[in-house]
Length: 264
Length: 372
Image 1: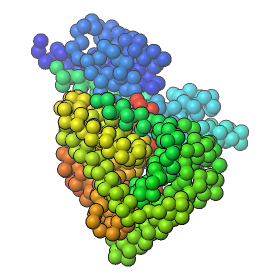
Image 2: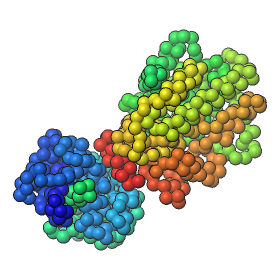
Image 3: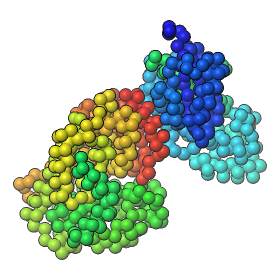
Image 4: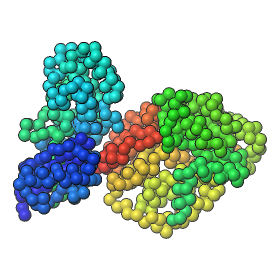
């Protein structure tokens, strides 16, 4: 079998979403994003099977599979497990060779990853156990504000006088938002304040590894345009985003498939 | 290696062990931090045991201490207030960080263990006057013990204690060196249990067990494999988390040395056996590897961590800091600078009495080890 037809896969079992991606040589054949469940082993099998079907291949055509994400140990059919930090670095570098800083904002944590000119990991920092600065924060707030997570990402554009959310803790911030709602503050002003609050937490982590351009954002929260706008404003630079064919939430699984290719 | 079980039994159930010791007629004094001049306590015939935090919830202590005190200080007070330290005949507080100093006052007012002493050690250790002061303070401590416990501490007893502790420190160092040379002979968790038990076990019995262990290791020990594992140094205050070693090993690394209060800072540096015993003890504590609550020189700590990494051929350093531990937190950027200058990678992990979830820890360690 020549190099051009080798098929690899990455399976990324995150705290909120489970992802699988199939790659042939440099080309992404398919990817699938589904919700995580209380049975990560079965979820891993499902997303992998679905992505194979979507790619039109049989499961046994995949030469090497890398599992990643919090549930990586539960990807029982994987040839190897690699931490999601290494995978996000590899995936982002594959799509954007000049990237030097990757911010991965997932469902329950946030990581800043610094990579060198050869795409190798230089340094990383991640948030502690709390939900501030993560997708969970956005989800909690969307529930109180009765808007969808998708709507959250754009409503902030209508904000004229954004509020300042002073509580770092997500649970306290929740009470703060309830107070603001009761004071008749406009939802869009609260949302912009929330995006700024989240990016303040992210900026702390980014500053710990040092800001080096080019910088991009991966993970589910990268799909929230309002967070990206707030990050641009906070960091004072332009974050480079992936083109529309690439979902930022799949970058970890992509990186796993890229690393898998190096193993065959 | 049956002898390891003895260390584990003591390390994992220090209170049970202490109560048994108490039944045999021993009096017991609890102490905090490796700056406690244990030799003098030992010479008094009373058994010194080191107090760590708690493995359980903290509720009673929080009505006395602010939440920004470290979990070690809050946890230790919790254990006392919960009545779990009922075997103690006294407690000794060496003057180190702010939290330990204030804990001392709160402890004195809210517990009742009999003997109580603050050993107000100097902070700056590199002046002639501080050396004199150090020796004076230890002379006072000797008198306090004599009066408080109704005993006589002769020079001969002090000399015996000095020899005992020199032997313990040399043995611990020898074990660390054997492990650094061949990490497969003991797991990190094993070495943790041995070092922790060394601060709890009856010290003459300890020496017997340490030499039994050394013999067992010469025969190959656990004969585990350590090829391909990344060699790491653990740095920080206390490490009361055996799981850290296991998770590092599961992630492809191995801790080959440390700069910890419950590790090399405890055993590095022996005491001159032929001089004036109290002055010799003072000299050892003034010259030993320094902790960030003390000052020896502007470069002592930074140079030391670099020297450890080079000597033990380590690929990186893991800083394990207790949340709210100001001395170590303030020192961290300084320590990191020394390592950065030598291109030695390091990572920072902040912990409390309980560790973050294992999945998150594994992600951090795996990535760090992958990066090396």
